Amino acid sequence: MSYRHFSLPAAPATLWNDAVRASEIATTAPWVIALRMTRMMTAGLRPDAQQQADNLRMVSEKVEAFAEAWWAIGWATYVHALGVMGATTTGRPPAAFPYVMGHALRPVHRRVRANLRRLTR
Image (tube, rainbow, N blue to C red):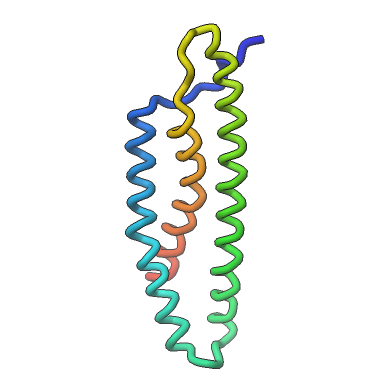
């Protein structure tokens, strides 16, 4: 049985894309935090319904993004293991770290960018 249909990306391009994603998360997340903290402080002790909904969304999004990233890591590790099993015939194992990290960063990156777009409207 061949597992060659599980194609793994080339390491240099994947590392570059992951580095860009990580740097975008690192530069965008502080802006999102600052915008949310400003909104919380201006709402005071009695936030309106919209602010309460945003506070609840802030917490639930983190849980969802973490769960997505966790499952993505598990799936990418599983696919990598299948790739290694198939690579025993070629003699060269595929690079696991870039493949797994790319899958882990995607959900977090997507949420952080969406939050910044939503909060700056």
